[in-house]
Amino acid sequence: MVIIGTPNDGPNEACCNKLDLQPSSLAPLVCAQSQDIVTDEADLDTLALELGTVISQEQIAPISTVNGTSVFSRQRAISVVQGQSATIVWDLHNQAGVAIDLTPLATDPDIAVVLRLREQISANNAKAIIEEVEMGVVTAEVGKVSGIMPVTMTNCPGVYYAEVAVVNTLTTPVTLLFANVFSLIISRGSFGADTQGGPPSIAEIRLHLRDSSPAESFLLDTLMFDDAEIALAIARPVMYWNEIPPPIQTFNTQTFPFRYHWLEGICANLFMMVAEQFRRNNLDYSAGGISVADQNKEQNYERAAQVRWTAYREWVRLKKAEINLEGCWGSVGSQYSSYGRY
Picture 1 (cartoon, rainbow, N blue to C red):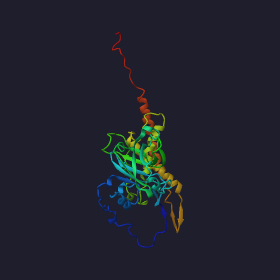
Picture 2: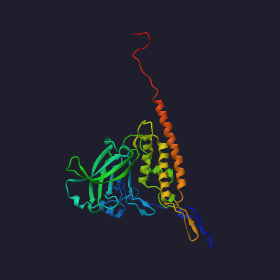
Picture 3: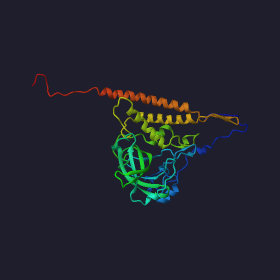
Picture 4: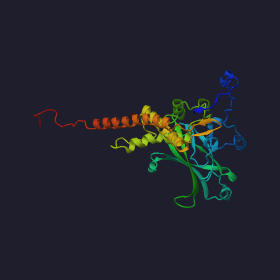
């Protein structure tokens, strides 16, 4: 942020105390059953009372905020670790983010709440459905439901569409009444399927971007990207690979093997999102002898995005040409071991 103003006539003072730069201590959490519960609930005390447990702050998938204002209509995201048996606690809401009262449906035996996963890029393939589990109603008045994802659902790292749906089981197939869709990111780990695939974890991406904590953003005092934005940025480089000709070796977020270039493509897409935000909100203004242009950063992020995305596009072109060329070579066997023998 560039600020032009008249200097103060008073004495200069340090902006902060060096002692404040030391890391603060964190209060320990009770392990118990708190580490396997993932939720979009912001009121931790209420949730702890209802579930009889302690909820870790690190497990919360908060509602996205922009300049301190909650964006209830933005798609949300939850992150779990590969092979984790996680409890998903979710507040069913409409498109405006208003909670849906499930009381009229809670006593109907033909109505059920289910959680279904589908890998994002394979969304049109029925085989992409991993598993479906039933969820229970925790607090009907505010649409709070809960369900346990078994390890079979978190076995393979990737980015998924998770859908919490209220369905009528009396019909065949079941009738969808309404649903909430969010992104579920399953990060690679040592448990679950023995696989070499899966995207870089959110922690890796944030570390690469120096966006692991609000302390790393002196001006924003918050995280630059939320998990939902990162989930979209993870999928887009793989989409580009699949759709750019020639159609060679189609991948999804479970199987894309090129991790270095994938990470660079993810960063490029995140920077594109930020550039779009600054483009929309840029307004230079002046008041009281001070000129402020804190949103005039579009060119910086656009340039950073284009450098990385151009490199990614060129790598895709060369890699596909290499794979295509290798496919031209081969050998054909013969039943004859030598000439002249019949």
